[in-house]
Image 1 (cartoon, one colour):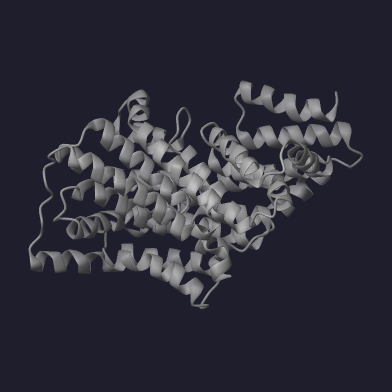
Image 2 (cartoon, helix red, strand yellow):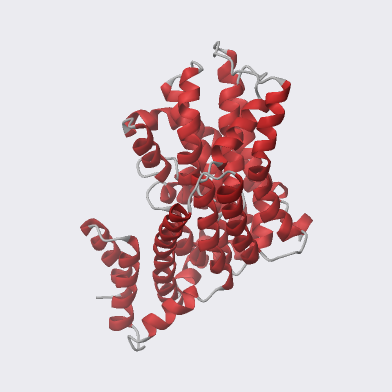
Length: 424
């Protein structure tokens, strides 16, 4: 059995059987090492350890914990109430609040499914009450959560930084404007939809009530300031900011809002550890698989193929975008980014594409995949949350997928939107 047959056939067979992605990658790499390479099998655990021995990955469990504690501690409800107060005078106040709250909660949690769950639980009933169709409401909630994969502190950005040896700080900075652009595109569509209907307006609070809502939301609104402000002021590193986000989340949820007990905090610790273990298992297995690919010369072969096929960077980037969009709707984004980054980085480096900019492109592609049928994680989150058939959720997502794809093309071909060269 040749190496190409192993790398192509074994994963396909294991996926058909239904093995988890980390076992697919680890088994394939182990078979290739033991049958086709003159290296001992003891190399496998060493390479796995090397894949995890990266300082940037230390921030992953802390950001996951911060997002979980904020989600359960009443933060999302206060963010929604505050933004709804600010948008109360608009005809489209409810959907604007949904997109604004998703952007803001994404800056707290960095997790797309968590954002759908936290904001959707509050805003879906409000949208339906306001007269918006089920199709539009489901499409909005499910797609808006995808922005969290781009808005710092994005878990995908951290994993890309670890895989490509780029700066987490630079990637966080580069993701801010693209994330806002994705939100603005949806906001424009909201205005267009709202013009053709007469939604029930949201209640506009009185002056005293508005001040009370703002003050209640102030600790929650301070979370991104703690995370990003601490990084860019030089007070602490991105990894240290993750730890600070967790501490700040506990202080806000336990002592200020008092909506979570110590027993519940311990449950959050356990669930965060479980999710972190799932992510790092994929990272470790992908490290072994990527090592086999690199040792076998697959990335260089890919570069040579691209060079022979086209010398135009815009054509190659368009091809990569199409490929990533397809991968994004078939594979979970964590697996996709840690597996594909080592393969695609040599290609875009050959084209002189800024690697920080390319990290944003990958994150945006995979964020769209999060709400693209048939396997987008956000779709399954909405299905579990609202009990609506996946087919009806998917139907409502079509215009949002088109709009986000257009925004992706703009982000791809106008690198200045990501601003890496202006800040670093």
